[in-house]
Length: 249
Image 1: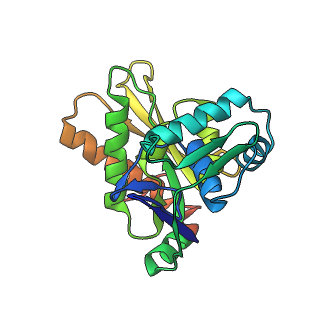
Image 2 (image 1 turned 30 degrees about the horizontal axis):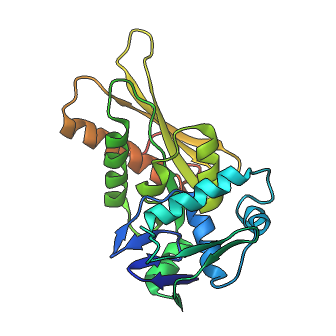
């Protein structure tokens, strides 16, 4: 696995882009384009080559690629005096900033490579702050992590707000499972958030659990979410795939 250091930026082996050790909110497609440019630094890459690599040869307009390059330049704060990506009109693009390439074989990375990769997407909820709930769930999952799972950062998954964007993120980041949730209101009952653990390879639901929304303080809701997430995470481990529907604390 390789990571690339240039100026104040670091593109990690897990496709997270950092500036001065802080993650940058760069969508997965743009990260893939940036990595391809960096991996071929000082080479001219044609639009066709980039589309073939990043979009798997799909039908992509020149405008889409141009917009993608624009977003990358903006996130890198490119200026005329401080260029990262050069445009060679009629030929393509070239990454021109000096980079330091290094292989990463740390024990932490090896552990991460052997762990189960999980994405959490923003839930569909009524009258609530969707992204705040998403952040709270990410926080709870990190508290439950014992090294057996690898949780994708919210800087990527918060863009998964529709079917197409979710599939794109799952394809680019190669997850094993993903967690989603929808607010439902059973007839005559308290509204709940229905959490689902879904296996990425076939998009089948592995486990579902509901969390009541009303008559709970923030602490109670956090505790209920934590318990539900613990049950979901347990199902990602091979020994627990056939557990009964409820798992005791």
